[in-house]
Amino acid sequence: MSWFESFVLGLVQGLTEFLPISSSAHLRLTAAFAGWHDPGAAFTAITQIGTEAAVLIYFRKDIVRIVSAWFRSLFDRSMRGDHDAQMGWLVIVGSIPIGVLGVTLKDQIEGPFRDLRLIATTLIVMGIVLGFADRLAARDEVGGRHRASKERKSLRELGVKDGLIFGFCQAMALIPGVSRSGATISGGLLMGYTREAAARYSFLLAIPAVLASGVFELKDAGEGHVSWGPTIFATVIAFGVGYAVIAWFMKFITTKSFMPFVVYRVLLGLALVALVAAGVLSPHAGESAG
Image (cartoon, rainbow, N blue to C red; front, side, top):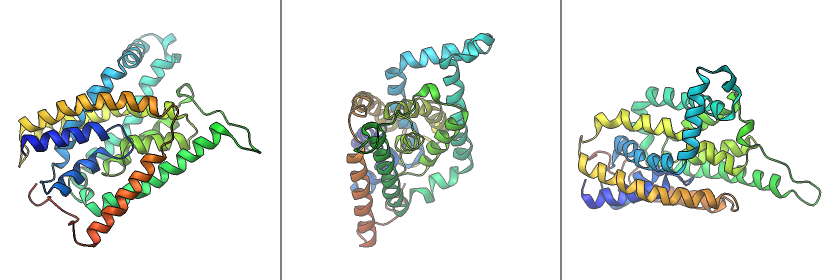
């Protein structure tokens, strides 16, 4: 991998990680369209450490408060009813599905799941799911002529059951094209949470999963055509761009609809289907050389 490729892929990772459009799919597609080798699952996982570092900084006050309360609750029973302490446990509970499935499906994640036909399908299907969830949330928020607005749930109403559902939604993102934020936010909206609550828990839930995945894949970094230098460079680029994107996205979702992302996902998926069907792109473009 050249330094230019790592710069572009780091930029793509930072731009797409927090948006509900799938960063892993865009890394895969960028390489395929440019005629580069597939950067691979290890490169993707490690560059995500950069974007998660942006999450750690952006949500630093929340994280410090949650970790502190959770740790104190281990020794002080009176703290166990504290919302922040409970959030610490809920992040742990919600991380279980992706941890188990990530290890179990490792070979599929690095192989069959990177097929462009599957990516096209998940882009379209999950785009439609996100669109439905977004319309449901909008209906509750604004009501209608014969229907009053409905108050949606905050994170203070999050329990173990919903935490696990969020976790299984996050685990779906092991398939490129699903989108970690897209799946968890969709799940949260369908369960009746506000946009801001679903997005906030989605980002907090991603921290242990992404950091663990990145550390787990470190042993495979530097193998094949992807060397350590470009990987680190891409991770740094992803951090800087990712921080700017997450700040913008958290403001965007408080007043805007997810529909632009829905339209983008569906159109990209359809274009990919057409290109593969026409033979312009191979479903396994770049894989053999990767």
